[in-house]
Image 1 (cartoon, rainbow, N blue to C red):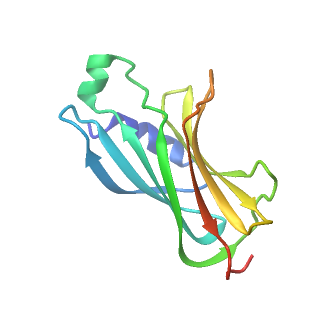
Image 2 (cartoon, rainbow, N blue to C red):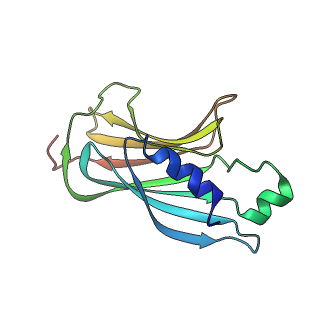
Length: 152
């Protein structure tokens, strides 16, 4: 059994606007907890790739602490220009739109990446946050990509 968390994550990736590709894995401790690093190309903005790092609990940690089907909510995001930027049909409202969504528990929690276009400052803002059914999460990570010199 490779990873239960990855299986849950992959199960919902087919419902996501964008696909994540694992590009790294850092072992954190002897019980199998890892930091997973994934690359996500923005499906509507050519030339922008985000890298997300998140914690994934190992089998021993799940067995010893219970709470079998849930991973922590915290994640870190960094987005960069990886080619010529071409903005497609994106949501330009203040609340933006989801670029990526993956489950972090069986039912109650998901990791989301949302894009907001700051037209006045010609900047794309990417927010990684958890969405929980019972409570929101204050754990937020943000990255920006300036658009100067690109097609808007």
